[in-house]
Amino acid sequence: MIFNMRILGIFTFQLLAFFLNAQSEIRFNSGILVSGSTSNFEELGGGGLILGCEYSHSKIDFLSIELRTETPFFTYKDKDWMFKNNDYLSYIFYDPNVSIVPKLSLKLSDELDVFVENEFSLEYISGDIQYGDLKKRVSVSNIFSYTPGIGLKYRKGEIGWIGTIGYSTLDLSKIVNKNKPIFYNYLIPNEMKLDIVLSIAINFYSKKL
Image 1: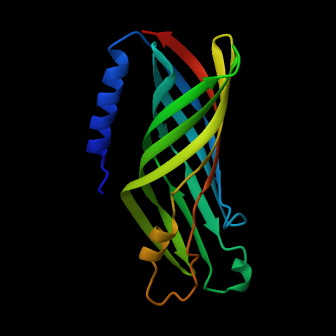
Image 2: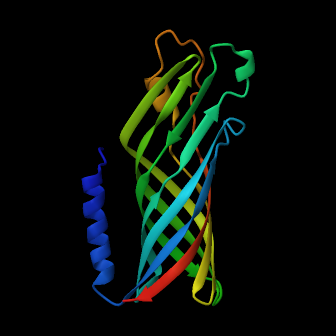
Image 3: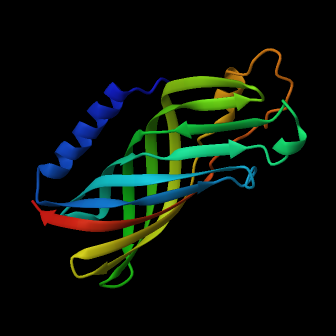
């Protein structure tokens, strides 16, 4: 199945139209994210910024949908690079993306909610890969990833604090293997997943429509 920006845009418009046809609330969120890997935890990591616009319907306030954009970067450096002469591997990737994030929430108290979210993302990855002495510039568009997560939201007055932990399907090894030079003999890991994603955001503006 091919995912592209046009399909994502149409889907987003249809969903937002439903929410805006009745009394609803709009919320703007911003924050940071940190990514790590359970399989390459010493070598692979990343982080970036988050900006989101979230809608909820007055009659189904346990359900909301967020249009989110993120600007993370990812880095990898072989932990034994000093001992491998010209066979070491490293890279830095930039990954601007846009996501649709449906959420289901459960109110624990007047100030605290727990929620689950499903983030469907289209990503554009670009950057430099260092295959020993050879550096290659790469760029790949229309990458689809999925990140389910669970989180808490704490409200105090007009401000809300949001913390989330999730699991991402994004695997960077495909990009690294596809661009590998023929003469490069270093064994590239089968997986380079940023599978653990932590984020902290602040709900800095809310308005009923």
